[in-house]
Structure formats: structure tokens, C-alpha cells
Length: 371
Length: 248
Image (cartoon, rainbow over all chains, first blue to last red; front, top):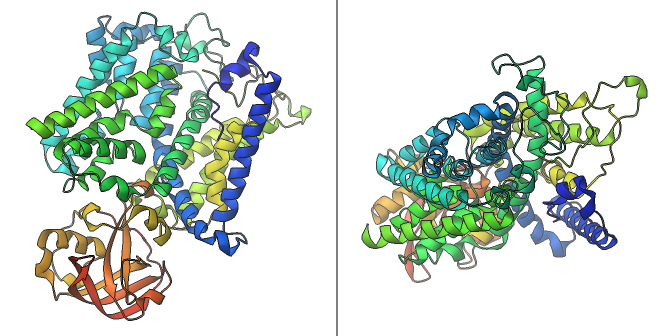
């Protein structure tokens, strides 16, 4: 499957554009993608499949069901995220936002990690929202801490964790550790000397409300005229709904592809790697933490429900591993990692993932050995 | 940020007299409203429950509505001039859920998918409705919950469950598994609950057949360990249940 990550940039800036070789590689990738898709549709669609391939029909139908399961489940949350982001973009001025965020990096990271309480979006929604905040020039620690903490530190997820575990203890640990990790990673990444080295190219240039250079930050079609920036935010101009929808659409297409690639990978891993093999490893105090963290990445389920899934492992797995699953999963999984690359440079995404991994592993081990 | 699908300049309303639809805009409209229509259609046919927990049905329909609205808002740009953009892999990617949803028959997870996941009573989410009352009215999930809690004490109780047929080569010729998926959120987290069924010629039942199994709970030796199983007195094929999955 072609991963068109840097495609938008190359489309807009002609210098990195279509050398003969690149075009050939791209065409080959397209051809392979089409061939795989047709093969999948043919075998899973059960259209005159020869007997030799028929065992694959059931498996690929299972693959399709899991893929669509993840996609359909995540869709409402992704849409809510892009709608929140679009409203932020259109009706909240950068000055207003910057005014409210602290300059001190520690306070900034702390406020970012708590922002989820006010903007309840889960992981598919927190990334578009964080990206928008960063584009608005909000301090880097705020954005990083928000993107990591918001999927857990929001009312819905806190309640679902309390309900799943029938008490406050696990929820308190989960929220406490998430806040701690988000602040730590927010400080680590957020105090980078040059924010441009951290943020993905389109995000690095802050939006300037008064000099709207469309080819800088908003390369997609804006058929709105941005007059609203100068009018008070409480008096939206006519056609407000359509503006939000138009903006949300372009952002949905942009983030949606990462959701789709992530769901494809997660479904493929589930279909072709037996979960049983993973679970068989699950008893030692160290290996169980690693296995549950691996499972969190593999399953890529939404943070609003992962406590119910964690609950099903509570009898077979160590408490530390359950906690690591609950803290690490919402921060890093297949789809969120791919979606993060729309906001941060890939190198930084790798740093964030690695740092979260180490912290969650450490916490899980501490709970298992001293808890 | 960048938007590869549509990079026309800010559009001024173009008179429809130009009459040359912008095909990429048309494609976007089709992708959005098509995905919305797919979700609505799956819901109408009762197939949405094959993918997600029914508690999310309302949210998904709301998402379908937003997709329709986005498509509708985009329809206005249908006659804007053609941009330099061409069809790309991105469109293929975004069309993937639509294509798979339309062309692959909607089926709940079945015996084939179980081969990759394995069947293990201990990893099923425990039922939140405690298995009380008459064991003859328990479903497979309640049985799994009760067996983890009470174990051997249930031997000899009457069993009456519905599940699909799953064959495991470790079972003898005259046995099969009656299994049911337990879904917490979406099909991605499905775990199977099941019990071995002792039934003469059980191996000949085609996999994925839905059956109603009646009998009593017994203990059998499987790979050297004593495990609970159903000594069946009746195994009858039934229609696929309205909700093929069980929900904890």
C-alpha cells in the first residue's frame, strides 16, 4: 500500500516533484495496490473462487469484518475531532488561545495534559485538535501533553474505567500515570530549541490571523473568506455550518487515510498472527507487561472502551501489565502513530513512542515488583 | 494544512452554464455520501451489529449524517474549474472501506477467523450479568463466567445454548466446539467463548453452522486436562441469531 505521507508537500512545492524515477516507483506502487485490492475483493467477495483458494475466503472475510469494525467504530470519534478542530480554526483566534496558555514550559505541559477535560475528544479526535492548537501557535508542551493525555484524561474515559473496574483505584492510577507521562514527554519534546524541527512542515508555520497567506498554512481549498477573524467570534457570519463542514471535510480526508492504513495493518496482524501465541507468553512479571503493551498496539482500540478489554485479561495477566496496557494503549498504537505523523516529524513521533514505551514499561514493572 | 484532494483556488460561484463537472469533486461527493449510505444500509439490514457493539449504533448513524452533510456541502463546488489534481492512490485508499463494505458479503466473524485467534475460556471478558438463575437459560458467555467462578460444581447441570460449529483437530471425531464471539467494542476485540460438544458424528457438521445444543455439563479429558464439555442429547441447526455476538 502506498503511504502518501509527503505527497501533499510534493504536490504543493514543485521542486521535489516527479522525477522520472519517482514517478515510475509511484506508478508501480499504485499498480501493486490495485492488484492487491482486486485480489482481496475477488477472494473475500467469493466470486467464482477456485477450490484451492476457498479457505482464504473465510479468513479474508474475517479480515474485512475486523477492518470495517475498527473503521466504523473510530469514524464518529474522528469526525468529532475534525469538527472541533474546524470550529477552533474558524472561530477562535490565535491571540485568544495564546493568551490563555502559560509561557512556563512546566505549567504549559500541565495545562495541556488537563485540556482534555474541557475538550473531550478521544485518540482519533485529539490528534486533529492538537494539530490545530499547534497551528494556532499554542506552546509546544501544551500540544504534546494534550495529544498524549486527552484520550485518557477526559470525563468519558474516566467514567468508563471506573465502571469497568468497579472502583476508583485503577482509574486513579491510570489518570495519574497518564498525566505524569504526558507532562514528562511534553517537557522533553516541547522544550526543543527549534519547534520547526519537531512539527510536521505544514504545522510549523503558525497561523496568522491578519496576514492570511493561504499557500502557507491552509493549502486546501478554503471557499470561506476569513472575514470572521475580524468579526467577534460570537457573531459567526452566514453559512457558518457550511464553512465548518467544508473545513472538516478536507481535514477528514487528510486524517482518514491514516485511520484506514492503521485499521488495515491492525486487521492484518490480527488475521495472520495468532493472538494465542501472544497470550501464551503472558505470565511472567516482565514478559506480561511487554505482551500487554504489544497487545495494546496490535488491537488499536479506542480508549473509551479499552478498559473493558483490559478487564478480560485481569485473571491471566499481572496488575502491572494491565496498567501498562491502559496507559500506553491510548498514547501509542498503530493508527495513532500513523496519525501523529500529520502533526509531528517522523523522527519526533518515534521519540515520543519510544519514551512513552519506556515510561509505561517502567511503571508496569514497578507495580509488579513493589505494588 | 495541505489537502491533496482538492487544490483549486478559493472558488467563486461559477455559473452552471459552464456545465463541465469537476470529476474530482464528484468523486469526493461520492466517497462521502457513499460511505454514509453504506453505514445506513448496513444498519437497515441489521448488519451493523457484525462490526460494532450495538451501543455505538446511534453514534455511527450520526457520523453517517455528518458524512452526508459534508458531501452535500461539497456538491456546490461541482462546477468549479478542473484543477491540476489527478486521481491518486489517496482516492483508492479512501474508497477502501466503501469498496470492501459493498463487495464483500457482510458476515459476522466465524470459525475461519477463530483459527487465527484460538479459543480460550480464560480470555473471554467476564459477563457483567452474573450467571444466576436456571443454568438451562444461560448463554455461552454466562457459562464461561460461571465455569471460571464455580468450576466443577456445575457438573450434571442442564445446558441449552446456541453457537456456531468450530472444529479443532485436538477434539475427537465425535465432538466439536459450540462457540460464540464476545464483543466489547468492535469486531477487533472479539474473543471467542465456547464449549466442546460431545455428539456422535459431530465432526461431520460443517463449520460455521449455527446450532442449538441441549444436554448436560460433563467433564472430559482433553490433552491430559479435565475440561468442561456438553454431553449433548440434541443438536439442531438454527438460523443465525439476530445478534451473532454476545456482549459482556
